[in-house]
Image 1: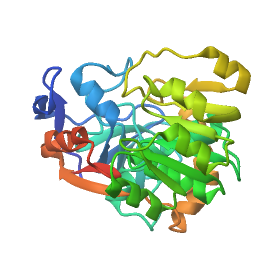
Image 2: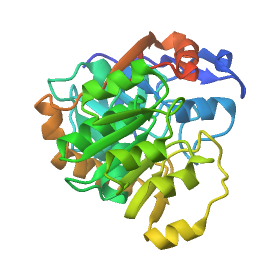
Image 3: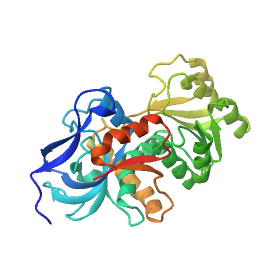
Image 4: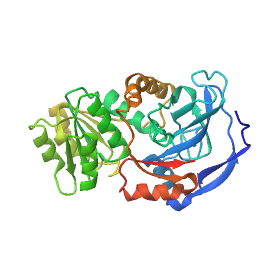
Length: 332
């Protein structure tokens, strides 16, 4: 292995604010601790939580890097004590608690996954956070089963495009909401059974029509706000509503009687604060159930655009337009 440099280029947050506060900085290359690996980053995914952190609304958990970036792909260049899952030179992709916007990043050995040969390193950098979010919320919390109907709000997002592919691969029907014809067409090409334009159509009525009045068994919602009460209307008896974000507002007025009459389960989660043991368990499940689909090329991230690390501000501007379809990544 080549000798590691003492310093590296990172993109830090100079102060809470707009994309312009993302600025290149020079920092020391970190050293991996017990159970950790050091990854020479080749690509880092850009996600909504990065935007929230930049604006001051989503601080990193205790002990995590203050740099944004929750998923990376690259080469293992150093091992902490007790790290045996991966070896030097391995190409890996990994969820991280922060620090992805950098030339080098610490990852938990147990949370890193081997990059299958069917993926480019840019595609690999777009997978870990997105895939773990979809797997845990749709299949573990939402318990989606073959033959059931999944409603995805934000179907053309990185999360949405991954959820479409996984749900279809496991034999479920998929309905999505989107904001344009281009986004609807993209989701239908991925395999969605119905794409509803929320700007011109009532998603509750359209879901009922598409399910012969039964409603959706699982609803993956990143909107929140006034969508919550409407989700209860769109849900099937014994339906599961899974909240992964509240882009439309964190508070809502809901009719609890709807939840009671339909025997609904409304749950939710965030990934970043979860324990390393929880995240490692999710990775193990993904390696067993989803990695074969990745190796076969049946599942791939939809790539919107890429920006060099130093242009992270432009990547955030792209995300904040909400015009992107699929994933935005930084290349290093």
